[in-house]
Image 1: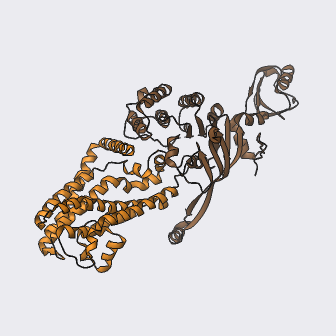
Image 2: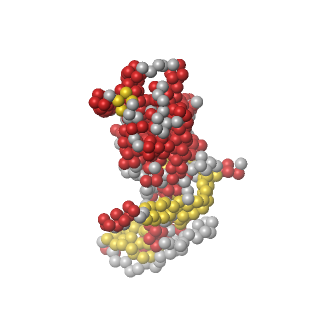
Image 3: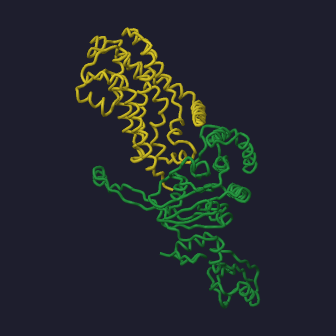
Length: 343
Length: 266
């Protein structure tokens, strides 16, 4: 089978929503009652991508960029307006049940557990729904219980769990049938730092050990930096970047910031070639390289030889700042495949 | 076969979840019983003044009522979750249903246990007993065998109508007022024999909104009554067929609706 290596394939996928707009004020609303006006909003605009088995892909974009809409089409919740999508070789919105058996889904804002039941019973029920055999279930639960530290939560009703605890249980719930593809829609939303860290470690582990293909939407760029080798950035329903996270960081290497704290005696600097001072605070100054060609080591060498310095460090550009840059300036990007993503 | 086992498990779970709130559970039964007792009381008052309504005596009226109570009792048991379905659509909770390897409709239907059924059935049995006693129904084997078939057909009609109204939520999101008009208010029509209405209304309740098949037409068969008004003898046995037609249309409407589901914003 030629599809063997492809987990997800999306071709000119498009989703339009019909939104009825009611007029302004009382009269407008009254008018809308009799004369409905519709507006077509296109949430996803003919996008294409392929994801291979075992990939860990970050799917990001601002609110309303079309992330969730894409995920919902891939999970069979929404039917696309045009275009096609295949997950594990199955068309999700035509074959919902078959698709559901082979994917795991976590919506950060919504639980799939039974609110009034103890966690254990939700798991049992999902075992039955997903037709997982007892022995397979026990084996999988053993692993999940350990990795996500579920033991103390199993007897608690879901409504009494904290957000972080609930998310751990929801993750486990989505993996009971050990699906080859896992969709995560903002799984770290609202969690504290420690809880986030635990979830990230777990996700990295199942991606590595089980080879689970993971698609993650998030607003937390630390999730992306730590987990996703590949990044797809969406803007207004179009893909504006699809490539390695590392590539993006390389591309913006001149965004690196050198943080220098000079000695009080020689605080006034007379301009160092190839460097711009972007911020200062007393004797502490932040410098950026003017272009990515000038070696960072060279610049540091120059500074160290001409001035007395107390402390010096180099800050990597964060993916967040890179993405913000892309949004703000519509930076011209070209991916390794040579495609250009500007409008 | 396995699917049935899964649904039963889901069903058992919903009972367990419901039992978490025992007091509300008991109050609910109480509310349903008082509702029925009130209705039957009204019937008694009417009949004690007029002795009969359009040629239907007390016993016959009570039998009519029993068919109605059985059909709505089972319909409430199986389709109760549909009444609040628009909430699932508005909250986007239906998302969850679509990502499980089970029929979406099956999941919605079995996700809630409706205890009021117990009350409907108590009323149904009581009315059946007194109705057939007072009306002097002779229970032949034929009648005894056909009774559950007619109730089943009535469930398909009432359930089908409910499902169609429910599916409207896929387009309009909110449909509570429609649910209350079509499902709850409309059933008052068949508390009385349908021939008390004018011919237009009878036509409507037979061919457009066919709830007259839930009790009025089949009651003729059980009571050995001869037809009047619109009634053609064939309609007496029409309930199961009408039920299958209504339910088939409703399943189709539901399926089109599911593909029209828009979820909620990201």
